[in-house]
Length: 91
Length: 197
Image (cartoon, rainbow over all chains, first blue to last red; front, side, top):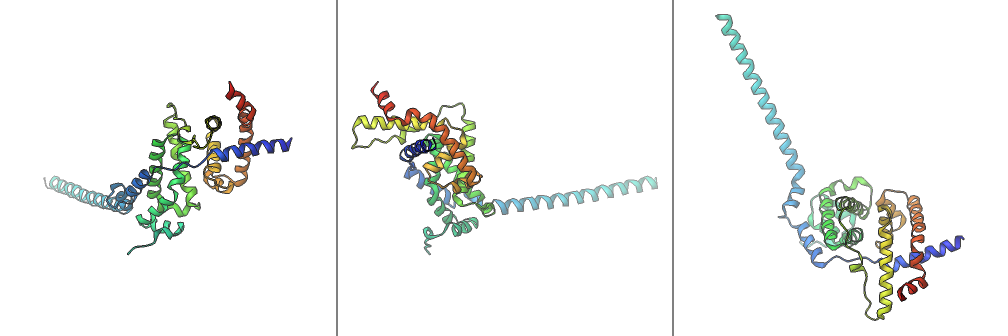
């Protein structure tokens, strides 16, 4: 029984070995994609390479600008409140 | 300066590619594009989608090549995994579309053979491909990696994220399934009988 299965499996494997062969891509496609991947002017490639550093720089700049803006706004508000109180106390 | 990049090992090419060396990535691309394309072609069944998905595999690989070393996989296994994920998405997105039969390219006519023999061979291959395409996705993947890409069980395990034993077990179960479907296919007498109808 086992040998029958083994023989059948061998047959199946032989058929698949002989029928399933690698399919080659078109040479034009291979060459074209190679150029797209290695072209330094390709925006997708440039984006890929510079993405990390530019993204980090953008985040840091945004954070710094945000902090400076919040500090400046807080100072303005505090000074306005003090001035308002001073005006009220004098009057 | 001209560098002999084709002599780079995968490991060295990967290191250079991770530092942004496009030439090194190009070497890796040349080394693996045929295998990845062939795998995707068998999974999608048509040239246009195979080309589109192959391009996506390598662009995605290029984007993430810096993270590659942490994964502990051979480069080929990593690329096959990317290809598998993209093919799975493609099947999901195209589930309503009818796939173009694989036999357009696979059924090769041998010039020296008699027309009757070619017809029988093509019929056999068509039956085989139909049977394989009816298998679940992971079994199709296993069959293609084993018989088209000629990977070992251990290598297939790395691609599929399974142990070698699990791959052997899945392969055995796949053979059992195929055996039932192949009854007609393997019996040469029935092929001849069918052919003579």
